[in-house]
Image (cartoon, rainbow over all chains, first blue to last red; front, side, top):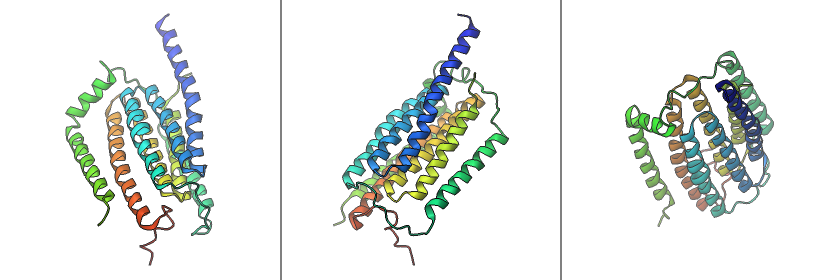
Length: 179
Length: 101
C-alpha cells in the first residue's frame, strides 16, 4: 500500500471511531445529568470516561488515555460508587425548588455558555490545520511524557506528590469519628 | 475526510456545558461532584487537542496534572460529604444551609 493510501486509511479509521465515540460521549453525559438514580449516573459517567480515553488515543495521547482508564474510570469512579453505596441514597426525592425557576434558568444559561464557547472557538481555531505529534512522540508517547515530567515539570511533579499526601491525611482526619 | 481539532473542541464544549447544567440542576451532592468531574474531563480533552495542534506534549502533561488534582479533590470532597451525612443524614445540597442568615 502506498503511503498516501495508508494515510487516508488511518484518517478514515479516525473518522469512524470519532463518529461512534462523539455521540456516545454526549449522550452518556446527558443521561448522567438527567437520570434520577445516582448509581446510574456514576455508571454512565464511566461510559463517558471510556469515550474520552478513546479520543485521547485518536489524539496520540496514549499515556493519558491509559491513566484515564486506570485512575479515572478505575479508581475515582470506584470511590464514587463506594461512597454512594455507603451512604445508601437511592432515588433523588423531588423537592420543591428553593429558588423559583432555577432549573429552566440553569438550562438556558448552560445553552448560553455553550453558544459563547462555540462562538469563541469558531472565531479562532476551528479551521486550524491539525498538526502531528509524530516528532514529539519519537520513541514512544510514554517515554516522551515521562522525559518532560522529570525535566521541565519536576517541581510540579513533586508538588503533586505533596498534594496527594495532604489529601490522604485530610481524608483520614475527616473520616475519623469524633469522640 | 480528516477530523480537525474543531470537532474535538466542539465535543469538549458540549460536555463542559452539560456539566455546568448538571451542577446547577441536581440536588444530590455526589452527583454534583460527578458533574464537576465531567467538566474537568471536558477541559482535559481541550488540553490534549491543543497539544496535538501545537505539536508539543506540554498539554498532555498538564492534563495529567489536572487528573492528579482531581483525584486529591475527590478524596477530600467525598470525605466531607461522608462527614456531612453523619451529622445530618442527608446529602442534598439544599439541606446544607448553615451559612444562611
